Image (cartoon, rainbow, N blue to C red; front, side, top):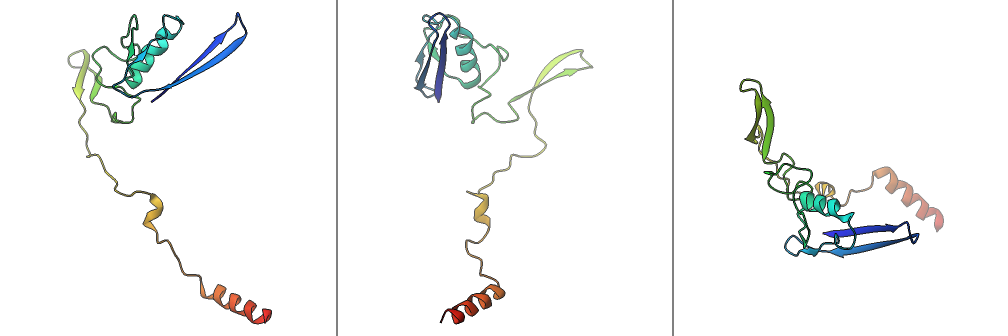
Length: 139
């Protein structure tokens, strides 16, 4: 994952962009001690992508529920999620249930949609005749 900090100083009229790379197992040092505004940004990145920031003063979920499992902006997170939350009119409260799919996930084994077609298609006969006539004229 690439993490980008865009910092702006109104006092010095300057900008700086800091780029760094990490994976899900390597924590990054928190920038909150240097730049207080990074607090919610780092919390959001941890909540949505699962990037852990070491030495963060309050690293907890900011956009999802506290009991939420996973990080929804990651590519390995299923589109349907793991839990369905709905209001049940019979019990008059919000209930959370595991997702039940009416159809199994489909797995497409094609590497590319263009590989379904042949790589070579023979030219129509009319083009062959015209090309042959041009060769005759050139002689």
